[in-house]
Length: 136
Image (cartoon, rainbow, N blue to C red; front, side, top):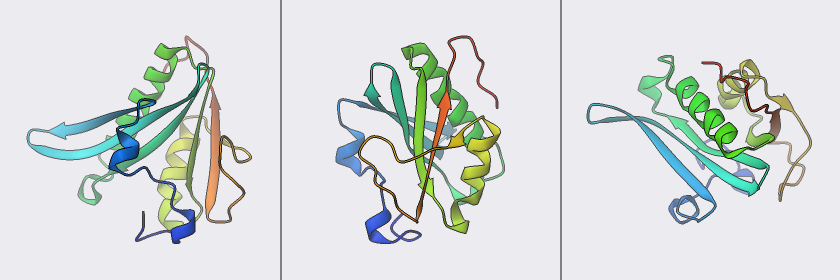
């Protein structure tokens, strides 16, 4: 994210952050090739935050991000979260991510948790119901 966002607007977790007790991390593999990853941070007993969702550039367009997002949303429902939020960039580089989240029902929202207003960030939220299936 340091290559695409101003330093003051990078909210990605580093390796230490990804190992925190309130963060779960998953990867998608094809044989020995890492295709993508995603993380889920528990904000409270009823709310999670999607973090660290990335795909390798050469795998984009293959559904890897949608697969990971569906897994993260299923996990949110399994945990009983009522809402899941995320922060992504406002720059053109992040437009595919914003479209993906919108296709899955996310809507823009004000900053949440410890986030502050930032012109380089877009905040999104999804209300969950226990029985609503994830869309791929």
